[in-house]
Length: 351
Image 1: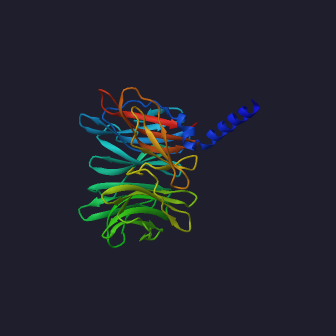
Image 2: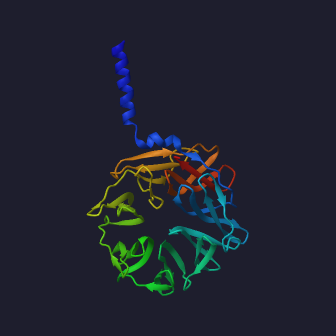
Image 3: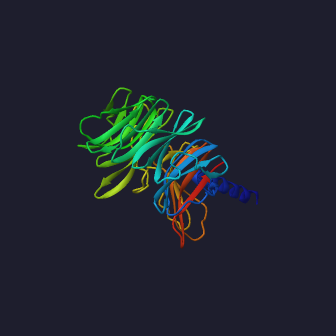
């Protein structure tokens, strides 16, 4: 009997040992109520400064066109903010950035772009020096901000140095900037469409230069994560025989490493570094009524999947953005319940 008991104990320990970290936290996802908007809604971005402050942006539908929507997380619940300039006018909100103690959000209204700035004194706006045909992306850090897009003359990189705007030039052969991000005022990265394919550019405080990143052949870039440790993680897709395959690239300070986690053609645009050190991103759900998140281990190869809570009668549950909020993960997106248009949803993993 003692021998049988010992065998059973060993089996239990062995089973516990093979449970992945993601499986261990799967039960932690919970639904967080979000005040309703006017459906259908579009989610643009989600960013968290810490466990008690996060902002989600997008736009809802009104009779006169899209209306900007802004939500704030206080560590316990979501509430809607309607105090910013332009809240009651047609328009939409985009990326959220934290520039020191301030919150900067890109806003499009009245046919032009501007930056909402929230400081201790409340909301104000920073007007751009010119209007663009398209506004592709926005980045801000203490002492600097960038807006990239196009006008009738082509590519435009607008740079704010804390006091005013200038236009920056890019290397020859750059046709279009698809995205931009920054760690400091003298360390910004952008991914570009060039005459020879996709390339990564880097701003060193003086000029934009080709970063010479050895991207996989026939690939594109979805996002670049710049981390305080100096680590750089690039996520994108490589096309082979007409099929897209997700890849990751990580710079450890010495060399680039490129694994291919088993994620198919998943977009890595919403990818974040979680509190557990792994990479997390929402993926197309393979279960009815539930969202799905992928967790990519530190080696960049092993992937496991974590599922959100059941949502009765949901046709589609689609997290659009993820953010680390202290020791937890927050997601923000849309959910379509049978018989209604998509409205807002949020989920939380951890405490």
